[in-house]
Image (tube, rainbow, N blue to C red; front, top):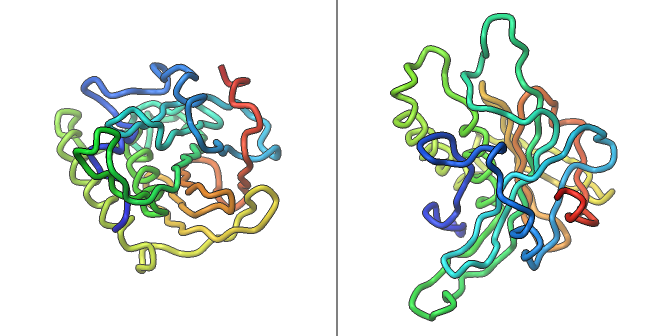
Amino acid sequence: METTSRVGAQAPAAEGGQQFPSARRTIDGYLRAPFPWYGLDEAFTGPRWLMQVGTTADGAVEHGSIGHGDEPSVRNESGSAGEPREKFAVVVTVAAQPSRRTADGTGLLEATSVSSAAWLAGVGLLSFTWPGQMDHSLRDDWLEQQTETAWALADDLDGPEWSRLSLPVDGVAAQFHYRESEYGWVLAGTTESGVHLGAYGRGMSAYGLGFAVIKDIAVYA
């Protein structure tokens, strides 16, 4: 699979020093990106918030996430008794990059692809979930196992785990790879503007979503 390295991807994650939205990075990384950022289109009128960016070893911004709706917290998928589940959708923008040398010429960065977006979205959803019957101390092992599963699924976008879903991107219908699980949904596709899009969510249906370029990311600061 031509995709960004799992080591360099810096996917959102859950515990042990990993970042949550409440500790999200500043807007600086978003402003340094040489590609457009995407979010839900104007049909979504709820809260929007920055999450984090991912960079290559030489510091170049390669991807980042924008949240919509309720800011998710790490919790089991069923929540506490009588507690409503959070409703959110996160849009992941990934720069379309060929395989290329690092800035110092000593290494090779893997190409990014729609599979990169699918994997980042899959891991992003997992980072805010764990099975309710699982002891908290076992979550790291579960997350590692599920991350490998998300990687395998992203490497087989034409496989039986995925279906096709047509959603508008900048007002034009685009095809996405889509799958649902007990934890939420994940989708991934490519835009005409030269970036790959991933998205994941819970409590908000993916079928009614649309995506659009964020005209001024500075308003999120």
